[in-house]
Image (cartoon, rainbow over all chains, first blue to last red; front, top):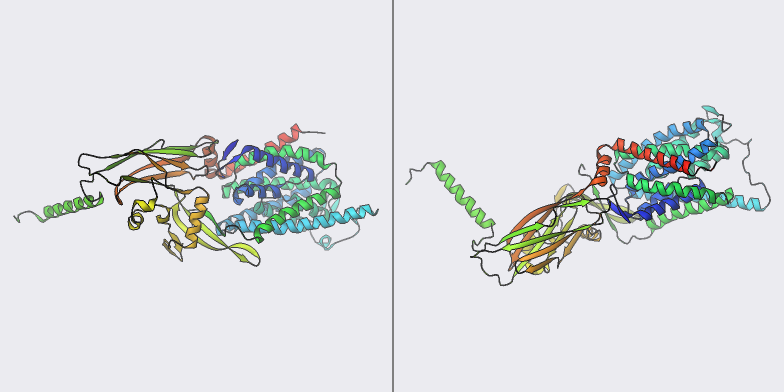
Length: 308
Length: 269
Protein backbone atom coordinates (compact mmCIF):
# COMPACT_ATOMS: atom_id res chain seq x y z
CA UNK A 1 0.00 0.00 0.00
CA UNK A 2 1.81 3.04 -1.28
CA UNK A 3 1.11 6.60 -0.26
CA UNK A 4 2.67 9.73 -1.68
CA UNK A 5 4.25 12.02 0.92
CA UNK A 6 3.49 15.64 0.02
CA UNK A 7 6.64 17.27 1.45
CA UNK A 8 9.19 14.46 1.16
CA UNK A 9 7.85 14.15 -2.44
CA UNK A 10 8.11 10.41 -2.78
CA UNK A 11 5.77 7.46 -2.30
CA UNK A 12 6.34 5.17 0.66
CA UNK A 13 4.75 1.98 1.89
CA UNK A 14 2.22 2.88 4.59
CA UNK A 15 2.67 -0.43 6.40
CA UNK A 16 6.45 -0.02 6.45
CA UNK A 17 6.18 3.44 8.04
CA UNK A 18 3.58 2.23 10.56
CA UNK A 19 5.78 -0.75 11.41
CA UNK A 20 8.81 1.52 11.89
CA UNK A 21 6.68 3.67 14.18
CA UNK A 22 5.60 0.61 16.14
CA UNK A 23 9.12 -0.78 16.47
CA UNK A 24 10.66 2.51 17.54
CA UNK A 25 7.65 3.18 19.78
CA UNK A 26 8.18 -0.20 21.46
CA UNK A 27 11.81 0.65 22.19
CA UNK A 28 10.93 4.15 23.35
CA UNK A 29 8.28 2.81 25.72
CA UNK A 30 10.64 0.17 27.03
CA UNK A 31 13.41 2.61 27.89
CA UNK A 32 11.33 5.71 28.54
CA UNK A 33 12.94 7.70 25.73
CA UNK A 34 11.58 9.50 22.67
CA UNK A 35 13.25 7.25 20.12
CA UNK A 36 14.18 10.05 17.73
CA UNK A 37 17.78 8.84 17.54
CA UNK A 38 16.50 5.59 15.97
CA UNK A 39 13.70 7.04 13.87
CA UNK A 40 15.70 9.74 12.08
CA UNK A 41 18.39 7.31 10.79
CA UNK A 42 15.69 4.81 9.75
CA UNK A 43 13.89 7.45 7.69
CA UNK A 44 17.16 8.52 6.07
CA UNK A 45 17.81 4.86 5.30
CA UNK A 46 14.51 4.45 3.38
CA UNK A 47 15.36 7.45 1.20
CA UNK A 48 13.84 10.46 2.93
CA UNK A 49 16.24 13.39 2.88
CA UNK A 50 17.96 14.03 6.26
CA UNK A 51 16.45 17.52 6.43
CA UNK A 52 12.85 16.29 6.07
CA UNK A 53 13.53 13.35 8.41
CA UNK A 54 14.89 15.57 11.20
CA UNK A 55 12.03 18.05 10.89
CA UNK A 56 9.27 15.43 10.76
CA UNK A 57 10.56 13.21 13.56
CA UNK A 58 10.30 16.17 15.95
CA UNK A 59 6.50 15.96 15.92
CA UNK A 60 6.58 12.17 16.31
CA UNK A 61 8.73 12.54 19.43
CA UNK A 62 6.38 15.26 20.72
CA UNK A 63 3.43 12.85 20.42
CA UNK A 64 5.08 9.95 22.23
CA UNK A 65 6.51 12.15 24.99
CA UNK A 66 3.13 13.81 25.52
CA UNK A 67 1.40 10.47 26.12
CA UNK A 68 4.26 9.59 28.49
CA UNK A 69 4.15 12.96 30.27
CA UNK A 70 0.39 12.63 30.89
CA UNK A 71 0.73 9.27 32.62
CA UNK A 72 3.62 10.58 34.77
CA UNK A 73 1.58 13.69 35.58
CA UNK A 74 -1.32 11.51 36.78
CA UNK A 75 1.05 9.81 39.18
CA UNK A 76 2.57 13.19 40.11
CA UNK A 77 5.94 11.75 39.08
CA UNK A 78 7.38 14.93 37.65
CA UNK A 79 8.81 18.20 38.91
CA UNK A 80 7.04 21.20 37.28
CA UNK A 81 9.50 23.81 38.58
CA UNK A 82 12.50 21.87 37.30
CA UNK A 83 10.76 21.23 33.98
CA UNK A 84 10.03 24.97 33.63
CA UNK A 85 13.68 25.90 34.23
CA UNK A 86 14.86 23.24 31.74
CA UNK A 87 12.45 24.20 29.02
CA UNK A 88 13.09 27.97 29.11
CA UNK A 89 16.69 27.18 28.21
CA UNK A 90 15.52 24.37 25.92
CA UNK A 91 13.47 26.75 23.76
CA UNK A 92 16.47 29.06 23.32
CA UNK A 93 18.55 26.01 22.41
CA UNK A 94 15.97 24.87 19.86
CA UNK A 95 15.81 28.30 18.24
CA UNK A 96 19.61 28.35 17.95
CA UNK A 97 19.55 24.79 16.62
CA UNK A 98 17.06 25.55 13.86
CA UNK A 99 19.12 28.59 12.89
CA UNK A 100 22.32 26.48 12.65
CA UNK A 101 20.33 23.81 10.75
CA UNK A 102 19.24 26.38 8.14
CA UNK A 103 22.78 27.72 7.87
CA UNK A 104 24.37 24.28 7.40
CA UNK A 105 21.75 23.35 4.85
CA UNK A 106 22.68 26.40 2.82
CA UNK A 107 26.37 25.50 3.03
CA UNK A 108 25.71 21.92 1.86
CA UNK A 109 27.21 20.44 5.02
CA UNK A 110 24.00 19.45 6.82
CA UNK A 111 24.20 15.73 6.05
CA UNK A 112 27.81 15.48 7.16
CA UNK A 113 27.07 17.41 10.36
CA UNK A 114 24.12 15.14 11.15
CA UNK A 115 26.25 12.01 10.52
CA UNK A 116 29.19 13.29 12.56
CA UNK A 117 27.01 14.45 15.46
CA UNK A 118 25.28 11.08 15.55
CA UNK A 119 28.58 9.25 15.42
CA UNK A 120 30.21 11.27 18.20
CA UNK A 121 27.24 11.63 20.51
CA UNK A 122 25.90 8.09 20.20
CA UNK A 123 29.29 6.37 20.42
CA UNK A 124 30.32 8.33 23.52
CA UNK A 125 26.98 8.06 25.30
CA UNK A 126 26.48 4.42 24.27
CA UNK A 127 29.98 3.50 25.43
CA UNK A 128 29.46 5.26 28.79
CA UNK A 129 26.11 3.58 29.34
CA UNK A 130 27.51 0.12 28.62
CA UNK A 131 30.50 0.60 30.94
CA UNK A 132 28.37 2.02 33.73
CA UNK A 133 25.65 -0.64 33.52
CA UNK A 134 28.12 -3.55 33.25
CA UNK A 135 29.86 -2.25 36.36
CA UNK A 136 26.54 -1.97 38.17
CA UNK A 137 25.52 -5.50 37.15
CA UNK A 138 28.88 -6.91 38.27
CA UNK A 139 28.64 -5.02 41.54
CA UNK A 140 25.15 -6.41 42.15
CA UNK A 141 26.38 -9.95 41.42
CA UNK A 142 29.24 -9.48 43.84
CA UNK A 143 26.69 -8.75 46.55
CA UNK A 144 27.71 -5.13 47.06
CA UNK A 145 24.97 -2.48 47.05
CA UNK A 146 24.17 -1.26 43.53
CA UNK A 147 23.38 2.27 44.65
CA UNK A 148 26.28 4.59 43.92
CA UNK A 149 24.66 7.84 44.95
CA UNK A 150 26.37 9.35 47.94
CA UNK A 151 24.08 12.10 49.21
CA UNK A 152 26.80 13.86 51.15
CA UNK A 153 29.34 14.22 48.36
CA UNK A 154 29.62 17.47 46.43
CA UNK A 155 30.84 18.13 42.93
CA UNK A 156 31.95 21.52 41.61
CA UNK A 157 28.51 21.87 40.00
CA UNK A 158 26.97 22.20 43.42
CA UNK A 159 29.15 25.17 44.25
CA UNK A 160 27.72 27.37 41.51
CA UNK A 161 25.68 30.48 42.35
CA UNK A 162 21.98 31.22 41.59
CA UNK A 163 20.74 28.38 43.75
CA UNK A 164 17.12 27.41 43.71
CA UNK A 165 15.02 25.00 45.71
CA UNK A 166 13.02 22.39 43.79
CA UNK A 167 10.37 21.12 46.17
CA UNK A 168 9.20 18.00 44.35
CA UNK A 169 12.72 16.76 43.67
CA UNK A 170 13.86 17.82 47.15
CA UNK A 171 17.07 19.33 45.80
CA UNK A 172 18.72 22.72 46.26
CA UNK A 173 20.97 23.44 43.27
CA UNK A 174 22.21 26.20 41.01
CA UNK A 175 20.05 26.84 37.92
CA UNK A 176 23.17 27.34 35.74
CA UNK A 177 23.82 23.61 35.06
CA UNK A 178 20.07 23.12 34.54
CA UNK A 179 20.02 25.88 31.94
CA UNK A 180 23.11 24.47 30.22
CA UNK A 181 21.56 20.99 30.03
CA UNK A 182 18.22 22.37 28.79
CA UNK A 183 19.91 24.49 26.13
CA UNK A 184 22.06 21.60 24.91
CA UNK A 185 19.10 19.19 24.69
CA UNK A 186 17.01 21.78 22.81
CA UNK A 187 19.90 22.49 20.47
CA UNK A 188 20.73 18.92 19.48
CA UNK A 189 17.02 18.16 19.24
CA UNK A 190 16.62 20.70 16.47
CA UNK A 191 19.83 19.79 14.64
CA UNK A 192 19.70 16.00 14.95
CA UNK A 193 15.98 15.29 15.24
CA UNK A 194 16.22 13.58 18.60
CA UNK A 195 14.33 14.28 21.79
CA UNK A 196 17.46 13.73 23.81
CA UNK A 197 15.77 11.70 26.55
CA UNK A 198 18.60 9.17 26.59
CA UNK A 199 21.01 12.03 27.37
CA UNK A 200 18.77 14.06 29.64
CA UNK A 201 17.84 11.26 32.06
CA UNK A 202 21.45 10.33 32.98
CA UNK A 203 22.46 14.01 33.03
CA UNK A 204 19.71 14.86 35.52
CA UNK A 205 20.47 11.83 37.69
CA UNK A 206 24.25 12.09 37.81
CA UNK A 207 24.85 15.85 37.52
CA UNK A 208 21.84 17.45 39.21
CA UNK A 209 20.95 14.43 41.40
CA UNK A 210 17.29 14.51 40.60
CA UNK A 211 15.57 11.51 42.26
CA UNK A 212 14.91 8.66 39.81
CA UNK A 213 11.19 8.76 40.61
CA UNK A 214 10.58 12.12 38.94
CA UNK A 215 13.38 12.17 36.39
CA UNK A 216 11.65 10.44 33.46
CA UNK A 217 8.42 12.44 33.79
CA UNK A 218 10.35 15.72 33.98
CA UNK A 219 12.53 14.78 31.03
CA UNK A 220 9.44 13.94 28.97
CA UNK A 221 7.95 17.37 29.67
CA UNK A 222 11.13 18.99 28.36
CA UNK A 223 11.20 16.68 25.31
CA UNK A 224 7.54 17.42 24.62
CA UNK A 225 7.95 21.18 24.72
CA UNK A 226 11.23 21.39 22.76
CA UNK A 227 10.03 18.95 20.10
CA UNK A 228 6.62 20.60 19.65
CA UNK A 229 8.43 23.94 19.44
CA UNK A 230 11.00 22.49 16.99
CA UNK A 231 8.13 21.26 14.79
CA UNK A 232 6.66 24.74 14.66
CA UNK A 233 9.98 26.51 14.00
CA UNK A 234 11.09 23.96 11.37
CA UNK A 235 7.73 24.32 9.63
CA UNK A 236 7.86 28.11 9.74
CA UNK A 237 11.45 28.53 8.52
CA UNK A 238 12.45 25.52 6.42
CA UNK A 239 9.01 24.23 5.30
CA UNK A 240 10.27 20.67 5.71
CA UNK A 241 7.80 19.07 8.11
CA UNK A 242 5.85 16.31 6.37
CA UNK A 243 2.60 16.14 8.34
CA UNK A 244 1.45 12.93 6.66
CA UNK A 245 4.72 11.15 7.45
CA UNK A 246 4.59 12.52 11.00
CA UNK A 247 1.02 11.25 11.47
CA UNK A 248 1.91 7.73 10.31
CA UNK A 249 4.94 7.66 12.61
CA UNK A 250 2.93 8.96 15.57
CA UNK A 251 0.16 6.38 15.19
CA UNK A 252 2.65 3.51 15.15
CA UNK A 253 4.77 5.14 17.83
CA UNK A 254 2.15 5.70 20.53
CA UNK A 255 0.78 2.15 20.15
CA UNK A 256 4.24 0.57 20.18
CA UNK A 257 5.18 2.60 23.25
CA UNK A 258 2.42 0.99 25.32
CA UNK A 259 3.64 -2.52 24.61
CA UNK A 260 7.24 -1.43 25.10
CA UNK A 261 6.45 -0.02 28.53
CA UNK A 262 5.03 -3.40 29.60
CA UNK A 263 8.01 -5.30 28.22
CA UNK A 264 10.37 -2.90 30.01
CA UNK A 265 9.01 -3.83 33.42
CA UNK A 266 10.51 -7.31 33.11
CA UNK A 267 14.06 -6.00 33.20
CA UNK A 268 16.04 -4.39 35.99
CA UNK A 269 17.29 -0.83 35.61
CA UNK A 270 20.87 -1.98 34.94
CA UNK A 271 19.82 -4.47 32.29
CA UNK A 272 17.71 -1.82 30.57
CA UNK A 273 20.61 0.63 30.61
CA UNK A 274 22.93 -2.01 29.16
CA UNK A 275 20.47 -2.83 26.37
CA UNK A 276 19.92 0.83 25.61
CA UNK A 277 23.67 1.45 25.66
CA UNK A 278 24.25 -1.35 23.12
CA UNK A 279 21.47 0.06 20.95
CA UNK A 280 22.81 3.62 21.12
CA UNK A 281 26.37 2.50 20.42
CA UNK A 282 25.37 0.36 17.44
CA UNK A 283 23.50 3.25 15.81
CA UNK A 284 26.61 5.39 16.35
CA UNK A 285 28.83 2.70 14.81
CA UNK A 286 26.49 2.43 11.83
CA UNK A 287 27.17 6.12 11.13
CA UNK A 288 30.91 5.54 11.64
CA UNK A 289 30.77 2.74 9.08
CA UNK A 290 29.24 5.04 6.46
CA UNK A 291 31.82 7.74 7.11
CA UNK A 292 34.87 5.47 7.08
CA UNK A 293 34.11 2.89 4.41
CA UNK A 294 34.79 4.18 0.87
CA UNK A 295 31.41 5.14 -0.60
CA UNK A 296 30.08 3.23 -3.62
CA UNK A 297 29.66 6.52 -5.44
CA UNK A 298 31.91 9.48 -4.71
CA UNK A 299 29.35 11.88 -6.10
CA UNK A 300 26.11 13.07 -4.60
CA UNK A 301 23.82 15.85 -5.63
CA UNK A 302 21.19 18.09 -4.17
CA UNK A 303 18.95 20.73 -5.64
CA UNK A 304 19.35 24.23 -4.27
CA UNK A 305 16.90 27.07 -3.96
CA UNK A 306 16.73 29.56 -6.79
CA UNK A 307 17.55 32.40 -4.43
CA UNK A 308 21.22 31.41 -4.28
CA UNK B 1 11.90 54.59 -60.88
CA UNK B 2 13.56 56.31 -58.02
CA UNK B 3 10.46 58.26 -57.01
CA UNK B 4 9.76 55.68 -54.25
CA UNK B 5 10.25 57.24 -50.82
CA UNK B 6 13.16 55.77 -48.84
CA UNK B 7 10.85 54.56 -46.04
CA UNK B 8 8.89 52.36 -48.43
CA UNK B 9 12.09 50.99 -49.91
CA UNK B 10 13.31 50.06 -46.45
CA UNK B 11 10.00 48.28 -45.77
CA UNK B 12 10.36 46.19 -48.94
CA UNK B 13 13.91 45.32 -47.96
CA UNK B 14 12.85 44.33 -44.46
CA UNK B 15 10.06 42.17 -45.83
CA UNK B 16 12.44 40.40 -48.18
CA UNK B 17 14.82 39.80 -45.30
CA UNK B 18 12.11 38.38 -43.05
CA UNK B 19 10.92 36.14 -45.89
CA UNK B 20 14.43 34.85 -46.45
CA UNK B 21 14.82 34.17 -42.72
CA UNK B 22 11.51 32.30 -42.56
CA UNK B 23 12.58 30.23 -45.55
CA UNK B 24 15.89 29.42 -43.95
CA UNK B 25 14.30 28.57 -40.63
CA UNK B 26 11.59 26.35 -42.09
CA UNK B 27 14.22 23.87 -43.22
CA UNK B 28 15.39 25.26 -46.55
CA UNK B 29 13.70 23.55 -49.50
CA UNK B 30 10.09 24.70 -49.91
CA UNK B 31 9.27 21.34 -51.51
CA UNK B 32 10.08 19.52 -48.24
CA UNK B 33 6.81 20.60 -46.72
CA UNK B 34 6.36 17.97 -44.02
CA UNK B 35 4.39 19.17 -41.07
CA UNK B 36 4.51 17.56 -37.69
CA UNK B 37 1.45 17.18 -35.52
CA UNK B 38 1.70 15.87 -31.96
CA UNK B 39 -0.84 15.41 -29.20
CA UNK B 40 -0.61 14.04 -25.66
CA UNK B 41 -3.02 11.62 -24.03
CA UNK B 42 -3.23 14.08 -21.15
CA UNK B 43 -1.75 17.48 -20.55
CA UNK B 44 -1.96 17.20 -16.75
CA UNK B 45 -0.41 14.49 -14.61
CA UNK B 46 -2.10 14.58 -11.22
CA UNK B 47 -0.19 13.61 -8.11
CA UNK B 48 -2.66 12.33 -5.54
CA UNK B 49 -1.99 10.22 -2.45
CA UNK B 50 -1.89 7.02 -4.51
CA UNK B 51 0.51 8.35 -7.16
CA UNK B 52 3.22 5.84 -8.07
CA UNK B 53 4.24 7.17 -11.45
CA UNK B 54 2.41 7.44 -14.76
CA UNK B 55 2.89 7.18 -18.50
CA UNK B 56 1.77 9.99 -20.79
CA UNK B 57 1.26 8.80 -24.34
CA UNK B 58 2.22 11.03 -27.23
CA UNK B 59 0.66 10.46 -30.63
CA UNK B 60 2.06 12.17 -33.67
CA UNK B 61 1.63 12.28 -37.37
CA UNK B 62 3.83 13.47 -40.20
CA UNK B 63 1.65 15.45 -42.62
CA UNK B 64 2.71 15.39 -46.26
CA UNK B 65 1.30 17.29 -49.20
CA UNK B 66 1.37 16.72 -52.94
CA UNK B 67 4.77 18.32 -53.44
CA UNK B 68 6.52 16.45 -50.66
CA UNK B 69 9.42 14.45 -51.96
CA UNK B 70 9.72 10.79 -51.11
CA UNK B 71 12.11 10.07 -48.22
CA UNK B 72 14.14 7.04 -49.04
CA UNK B 73 15.48 6.47 -45.54
CA UNK B 74 12.10 6.92 -43.89
CA UNK B 75 11.35 9.24 -41.00
CA UNK B 76 13.06 9.48 -37.65
CA UNK B 77 11.40 10.97 -34.59
CA UNK B 78 13.10 12.24 -31.44
CA UNK B 79 10.88 13.28 -28.52
CA UNK B 80 12.57 15.38 -25.83
CA UNK B 81 10.68 16.04 -22.59
CA UNK B 82 12.21 18.67 -20.33
CA UNK B 83 10.97 19.15 -16.78
CA UNK B 84 11.08 22.35 -14.73
CA UNK B 85 14.57 23.80 -14.42
CA UNK B 86 16.49 23.84 -11.16
CA UNK B 87 19.94 24.53 -9.78
CA UNK B 88 21.76 21.43 -8.62
CA UNK B 89 24.97 21.09 -6.63
CA UNK B 90 27.03 18.00 -7.28
CA UNK B 91 29.42 17.11 -4.48
CA UNK B 92 32.50 14.94 -4.75
CA UNK B 93 33.58 13.07 -1.64
CA UNK B 94 37.17 12.89 -0.57
CA UNK B 95 38.90 11.24 2.34
CA UNK B 96 39.81 13.88 4.91
CA UNK B 97 41.38 12.69 8.16
CA UNK B 98 40.04 9.18 7.68
CA UNK B 99 36.44 10.06 6.95
CA UNK B 100 34.69 10.70 3.66
CA UNK B 101 33.43 14.25 3.35
CA UNK B 102 32.05 16.39 0.55
CA UNK B 103 35.22 18.15 -0.52
CA UNK B 104 34.53 19.53 -4.02
CA UNK B 105 31.30 20.82 -5.44
CA UNK B 106 30.05 22.11 -8.76
CA UNK B 107 26.79 23.97 -9.31
CA UNK B 108 24.72 23.20 -12.38
CA UNK B 109 22.66 26.24 -13.20
CA UNK B 110 19.13 26.04 -14.53
CA UNK B 111 19.33 22.44 -15.70
CA UNK B 112 16.28 20.26 -16.34
CA UNK B 113 15.08 18.48 -13.23
CA UNK B 114 13.68 15.83 -15.56
CA UNK B 115 14.82 14.95 -19.07
CA UNK B 116 13.66 12.12 -21.25
CA UNK B 117 14.78 11.54 -24.81
CA UNK B 118 12.79 8.99 -26.79
CA UNK B 119 13.66 8.01 -30.33
CA UNK B 120 12.77 5.31 -32.84
CA UNK B 121 16.39 4.20 -33.27
CA UNK B 122 19.87 4.92 -31.98
CA UNK B 123 20.22 8.69 -31.96
CA UNK B 124 23.76 8.71 -33.37
CA UNK B 125 22.42 6.96 -36.50
CA UNK B 126 19.70 9.55 -37.06
CA UNK B 127 21.95 12.47 -37.95
CA UNK B 128 25.59 13.51 -37.81
CA UNK B 129 27.17 14.82 -34.61
CA UNK B 130 27.03 18.48 -35.63
CA UNK B 131 23.32 18.41 -36.41
CA UNK B 132 22.59 16.57 -33.18
CA UNK B 133 24.68 18.99 -31.20
CA UNK B 134 23.10 22.06 -32.80
CA UNK B 135 19.60 20.77 -32.14
CA UNK B 136 20.57 19.49 -28.64
CA UNK B 137 19.33 16.03 -29.45
CA UNK B 138 20.13 13.30 -26.93
CA UNK B 139 21.19 13.36 -23.28
CA UNK B 140 24.89 13.61 -24.07
CA UNK B 141 24.35 16.67 -26.26
CA UNK B 142 22.03 18.58 -23.93
CA UNK B 143 23.52 21.76 -22.54
CA UNK B 144 24.25 21.47 -18.83
CA UNK B 145 25.66 24.85 -17.82
CA UNK B 146 27.89 24.83 -14.75
CA UNK B 147 29.04 27.69 -12.64
CA UNK B 148 32.82 27.61 -12.83
CA UNK B 149 34.57 30.32 -10.81
CA UNK B 150 31.89 32.93 -11.48
CA UNK B 151 31.36 32.06 -15.14
CA UNK B 152 28.49 29.96 -16.40
CA UNK B 153 29.37 27.57 -19.18
CA UNK B 154 28.94 23.97 -20.23
CA UNK B 155 32.06 21.89 -19.69
CA UNK B 156 33.67 19.29 -21.90
CA UNK B 157 31.65 16.11 -22.23
CA UNK B 158 33.95 13.86 -20.21
CA UNK B 159 34.15 16.24 -17.26
CA UNK B 160 33.75 13.97 -14.17
CA UNK B 161 31.15 16.23 -12.56
CA UNK B 162 29.07 16.34 -15.72
CA UNK B 163 29.26 12.57 -16.10
CA UNK B 164 28.41 12.03 -12.43
CA UNK B 165 25.48 14.41 -12.76
CA UNK B 166 24.06 12.48 -15.71
CA UNK B 167 24.70 9.14 -14.03
CA UNK B 168 22.98 10.17 -10.78
CA UNK B 169 20.01 11.60 -12.64
CA UNK B 170 19.71 8.40 -14.71
CA UNK B 171 19.94 6.29 -11.52
CA UNK B 172 17.07 8.31 -10.03
CA UNK B 173 15.00 7.65 -13.18
CA UNK B 174 14.78 11.39 -13.78
CA UNK B 175 16.94 11.35 -16.90
CA UNK B 176 16.42 8.72 -19.52
CA UNK B 177 17.34 8.01 -23.11
CA UNK B 178 15.32 5.31 -24.79
CA UNK B 179 16.38 4.27 -28.28
CA UNK B 180 13.14 2.38 -28.94
CA UNK B 181 10.84 4.80 -27.16
CA UNK B 182 9.09 5.91 -30.35
CA UNK B 183 7.10 3.35 -32.33
CA UNK B 184 5.84 3.92 -35.86
CA UNK B 185 2.30 2.58 -36.16
CA UNK B 186 2.16 3.45 -39.86
CA UNK B 187 4.83 5.07 -42.06
CA UNK B 188 3.73 8.53 -40.96
CA UNK B 189 2.02 7.80 -37.64
CA UNK B 190 3.96 7.35 -34.43
CA UNK B 191 3.46 6.83 -30.73
CA UNK B 192 5.71 7.36 -27.69
CA UNK B 193 5.13 6.69 -23.99
CA UNK B 194 6.61 9.38 -21.73
CA UNK B 195 7.35 7.88 -18.30
CA UNK B 196 6.68 10.19 -15.34
CA UNK B 197 8.40 8.60 -12.31
CA UNK B 198 6.85 8.61 -8.84
CA UNK B 199 9.22 11.29 -7.55
CA UNK B 200 8.90 13.56 -10.60
CA UNK B 201 9.15 17.23 -9.66
CA UNK B 202 5.97 19.24 -10.05
CA UNK B 203 5.75 21.96 -12.67
CA UNK B 204 5.57 22.44 -16.39
CA UNK B 205 7.19 19.93 -18.78
CA UNK B 206 8.06 20.94 -22.33
CA UNK B 207 7.60 18.28 -24.97
CA UNK B 208 9.63 18.85 -28.11
CA UNK B 209 9.16 16.56 -31.11
CA UNK B 210 11.74 16.62 -33.90
CA UNK B 211 11.34 15.05 -37.29
CA UNK B 212 14.46 13.91 -39.13
CA UNK B 213 14.89 12.33 -42.51
CA UNK B 214 18.16 11.48 -44.22
CA UNK B 215 20.12 13.17 -41.43
CA UNK B 216 18.32 16.52 -41.71
CA UNK B 217 15.87 18.04 -39.31
CA UNK B 218 12.68 18.72 -41.28
CA UNK B 219 10.12 19.85 -38.76
CA UNK B 220 9.59 20.43 -35.11
CA UNK B 221 6.48 20.52 -32.92
CA UNK B 222 6.08 21.63 -29.35
CA UNK B 223 3.53 20.83 -26.73
CA UNK B 224 3.58 20.79 -22.94
CA UNK B 225 2.32 18.89 -19.98
CA UNK B 226 1.98 19.77 -16.37
CA UNK B 227 2.69 17.69 -13.27
CA UNK B 228 0.62 18.98 -10.37
CA UNK B 229 -0.24 17.87 -6.89
CA UNK B 230 -3.98 17.68 -6.33
CA UNK B 231 -6.36 17.27 -3.44
CA UNK B 232 -4.86 16.53 -0.07
CA UNK B 233 -1.28 16.44 -1.38
CA UNK B 234 -1.61 19.90 -2.90
CA UNK B 235 -3.35 21.22 0.19
CA UNK B 236 -0.57 20.00 2.49
CA UNK B 237 2.24 21.19 0.23
CA UNK B 238 0.67 24.63 -0.19
CA UNK B 239 -0.06 24.96 3.50
CA UNK B 240 3.50 23.97 4.41
CA UNK B 241 4.91 26.52 2.03
CA UNK B 242 2.56 29.48 2.27
CA UNK B 243 1.45 29.28 5.90
CA UNK B 244 4.47 27.66 7.53
CA UNK B 245 3.78 28.88 11.06
CA UNK B 246 0.13 27.86 11.02
CA UNK B 247 1.03 24.51 9.45
CA UNK B 248 3.62 23.92 12.19
CA UNK B 249 1.08 24.78 14.89
CA UNK B 250 -1.44 22.36 13.43
CA UNK B 251 1.17 19.59 13.15
CA UNK B 252 2.26 20.15 16.75
CA UNK B 253 -1.38 20.11 17.86
CA UNK B 254 -1.90 16.89 15.93
CA UNK B 255 1.04 15.39 17.85
CA UNK B 256 -0.51 16.45 21.16
CA UNK B 257 -3.91 15.03 20.24
CA UNK B 258 -2.36 11.72 19.16
CA UNK B 259 -0.34 11.54 22.37
CA UNK B 260 -3.34 12.43 24.53
CA UNK B 261 -5.52 9.94 22.68
CA UNK B 262 -2.99 7.15 23.28
CA UNK B 263 -2.79 7.96 26.98
CA UNK B 264 -6.60 7.77 27.25
CA UNK B 265 -7.00 4.57 25.23
CA UNK B 266 -4.18 2.72 26.96
CA UNK B 267 -4.79 4.08 30.43
CA UNK B 268 -3.81 1.46 32.95
CA UNK B 269 -4.13 3.22 36.29
